[in-house]
Image (cartoon, one colour):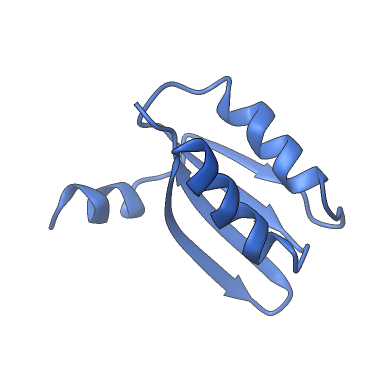
Length: 85
């Protein structure tokens, strides 16, 4: 098991739930929360905003944080993001 697999299996250090809110709330809350975290910590974002499927990966690419995985369960999306070093 490599480091990425271990990070995906670990319990998130912080969880934010933006269910019921649309853009830009998921990005704004993700950005606000990740600033309070330590490098290497994992954030779980829960969202019901369909636009987050494009927005969160694009935000990760732009900011350098690592999108470990995304899960989709009906109308709910979960993103696991590791804060960059």
